[in-house]
Image (cartoon, one colour):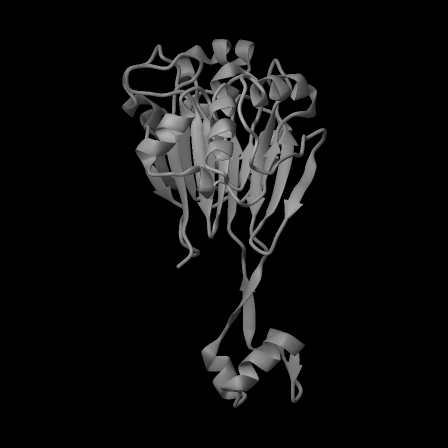
Length: 301
């Protein structure tokens, strides 16, 4: 049975706390694992969450601030230590190639795994498979930063009542699906579009067009809310979002499940992030993330 869930490995922003590790997020999508922004301590958090190096297929780094990337060294070495047999692809801003190189080869180790570097230089599609298309959009932060969006291809849902009305059953249903028509009956006559699921990962950024492009129509949006609304001036200055801004994006983009994360150490009451998100008018499912939380991607409507 396919599994689609977010495993939260860390939720702190620049400074970790006693209860929050630096960033780290593992998206399980059917048989693949996409690791986003492995901050310091991610390797240990993966162990605590029951995730192994063999679960990884892609690593996606939004930008090269330490809380989003210092864990790369440990994760990459663990991938090699465990001799992961399949290829793992790493996406990151091309402008930060020197940082990736330093982290990949931070210390001596034996390379045994296939780690393919696929840096991001512009908005667009990064990869496509039967399960998803991975896209990137530029964000607004003091250093170059990209958010990631995963889109499942649309499918078709067969409608039993209509199939029965045309007398189509058994093997003929599969034939109609493959060929698009059968005995004058079109596939469109007995089916409807099944919209593919959509997931977006948005870290350090101010409000910008890229945020909305990433969030549009998502079933799940994982987004930073470093500050509470009273500190909006700090958010703008340092290139971040407030809880209210993040929720406003989700509201306007039609997001079904909003996951807030990347919290400043200055705040000790996570309930206030939820309160401000609701005050901004977001009415969908809402999660204020904490370390080692598992969040299922919403089922299709």
